[in-house]
Image 1: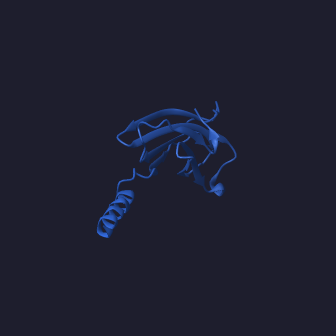
Image 2 (image 1 turned 60 degrees about the horizontal axis):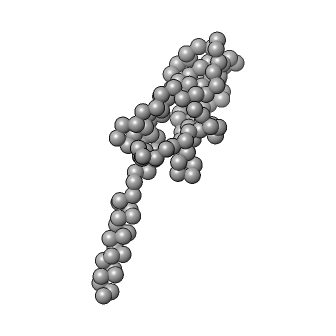
Image 3 (image 1 turned 90 degrees about the vertical axis):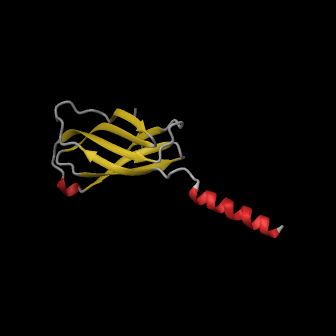
Length: 124
């Protein structure tokens, strides 16, 4: 009897460590060069596609000229993905530009209806 319990517990532990869905993580990030600095836009989603379990989402947003950024993501409440970026403030110029930021995120569940934020603010 004890052998069966140990076997069942071992299988449960193995399944939880190997059978869980993929962890959501950023696998690629790309920032465009300055698109324009005449019509500054609020952050908005430009495109969103899911292939297999990988989401590619592009947003357009305004930031200081000279931006050289590194993308980051945070998962909030398992259904909200917060898109963000890090940069060196010493490299920024005193003007604004629109940029396209493309995030490639692995571990997405196609059947889940994710919400998106940019810099902790809802984005559509």
